[in-house]
Length: 198
Image (cartoon, rainbow, N blue to C red; front, side, top):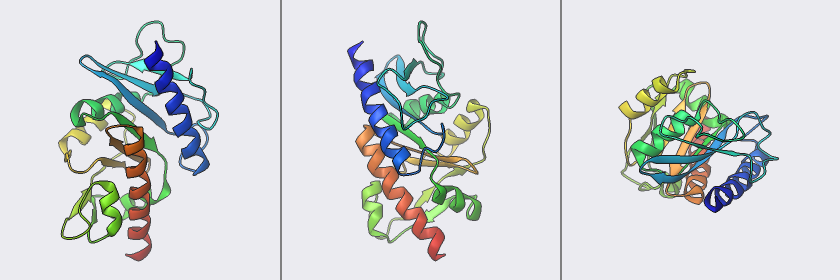
């Protein structure tokens, strides 16, 4: 299917970019794009591969539970279930799960949520630069994607397209991969500023 190949090509390019930034070390992290919302279908990077060396074929099509559709040649990460939950609840066109250090450190300091305000970079995250309190939700880590999905949904704010999983990493989403990338880059700057100045 041409849409899957195009998505795979875009996901491989984004994964290489994030690997070069140190945000997808080893085989960590995963990216997805939404093919269809009804029924929900996502193209997700395949599990267990070096994210700096993916090809357009290193993707898996999954359903609303994050399970691979029949006849897929590779397996998705277990985290595909959370990608699917975010896509379903937030209507996201793309979700990026990255292992930046700043969000994990920030979650250690502010486990009830990371508050940000009065920073120009918030505009790149889709929020106002002033007089707008932005709280990035933090949820405890779990190997059960249903538990993580429930925690995400319980604290979901449509105006805040990010989630930090404590001692793990961050999920950021947008209408497409470019929007998710820009938000992830801005979020990393914001949380690095927060951890280094407070």
